[in-house]
Each structure stands twice: as C-alpha cells, then as structure tokens.
Length: 135
Image (cartoon, rainbow, N blue to C red):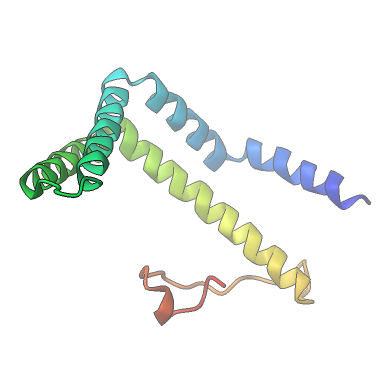
C-alpha cells in the first residue's frame, strides 16, 4: 500500500470525525459573527497602535499602558463571546485528537506495535521543562 494514499484516507476519516465537524461548524459560526469580527479587528488595531508607539525612541508609557489595558478588556470580551467559547472548545478537541494521532505515529516509528501502542497520558501544566511528555 502507498503510504501517501493511506494518509489521504486518514485525512478523509478525520474530516468525518465529530470533533472535526464541530470545529468546522464553530469556525463558520465565528466567521458569521459580525460583532466578534469587529472585536477581533479592534484588537488588531490596538496591537498595531501599541507596536507603533513602542517603536518610538521616546515611547509614551501612559499610552502604552492605555493600549495594554484596552487590549486586555477587548480580548476578554472576545474570549467571553459564546461563539468563541464553542470555537476554543472545538479547537482543543481537534488539537487533542491530532496530538494523539501524532503520538501513535511516533511510537510506530520507534518500533512499537501499531495495533496496540498507546501514548502515555499526561496532564500538561504548560511548563514544558517540568515534563518532557510532549517530545
């Protein structure tokens, strides 16, 4: 069997998985949410304004703090948006699925039995130096 063809079959199976379908639907809902998109555009403008001010030789610290505060407030509003909450949950589910698939493939490359190998479960704290489980 051709490994590329098998990979394409895996890709097609992933696109039929409920986690992928939920992610795809959540992405479409985000794209259709005009209020959310306006907020995301506002974040980008705030970020550009911050970068522009920070690049000045005599950057105004008060302006930078105001941009930072405004950015945080708008970011919180974005992340509290119902569509964004659903999107983030769906994105995490797809990321977890893809990480699991990648770990299985990695174990197979290391010589483990493809039919029985299972990645070790670990809870990620975000501190990669403390774990080393993601490789």
